[in-house]
Length: 418
Ligand code: FES
Ligand SMILES: [Fe+2]
Image (cartoon, rainbow, N blue to C red):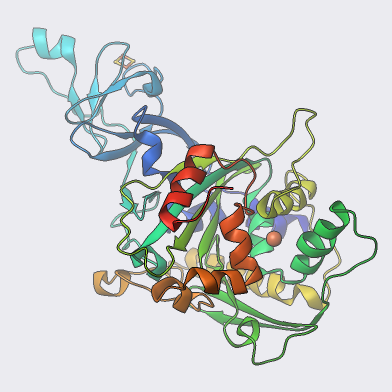
């Protein structure tokens, strides 16, 4: 249980709030680069700030104030040029550093046109593994961490976005909540398929460990032992707002206090014999969350998670909860946030920020799926593992994979499309 004041500290993310300032110290994934292939301008709301993301014709990414510095027109209705983005109201041109490069009327009529004071808000953007990351904190920006899976080759990658109608922190608490797998994904999944009774192996033992880039949780379920990878390696609640499960990442990126952008990045290595496989473009798609009646879609794994997150309310009321021993990880994570918030208030840099370019270029995390993703498996091996076999058959993580993404996946894997 938390006091209302402590709950606010964890959940409020606007500019100037303690948590908002903390999250701004980390690069945040905000879009797939392929989203800008059609329209090169995308509106983005991040931690309560309205922005436009764009790629200019020179290939530079920009993330600037959605409102033009002249008289506040919507830059989403502008257009990109060789350098920068131009407002469609009176033609001011801005670049990715926020400089105003042109003011057509002044440039034409004034003998010495000056643009001093006409800068706009601008944040750095970097592309990595098909994702676009933004940094909204004080400069100089830290290095963008290149997690090891971003360096893997011979794999099919895809990015899935979802607009989740609740605060980011309850989504992130799900990253350190092993027991929900047994109930939400296994037992509930079985009930929805018509099973009677709770069929999933029970959790028997949990362990949570802290490290620089978050927490590792480990578990033993009925039928498993301490020799199992789920106990010897575990899974990672990635600091500060991510989740890493071996072959995929999920981030819970705050849109504002009551909305979250779920960004998931998936990797699937092609079967042995299909190499070399080079994916030119990482597809990005948006998973719909509700059916035509307004009910949440419950057929897919992350959609099920979202039912839990959104079901806790726009901002979960943590004054009314009852934490038990299954929630030790949740308590550890909250404590670390409170510690980091205190340290920041005392002028210190929060943990897990990387300033060394060398260190940032490939960061390994505890990973149960490293071998299968780096060395590869034969199609026969896929068939022996129920999860991998299922993964080839259909995309179970998120509802709504577009047929063209499925086709590209099937082609990469060299399997039949059915
Ligand atoms: S409002 Fe954008 S140029 Fe005038
Ligand atoms: Fe889950």
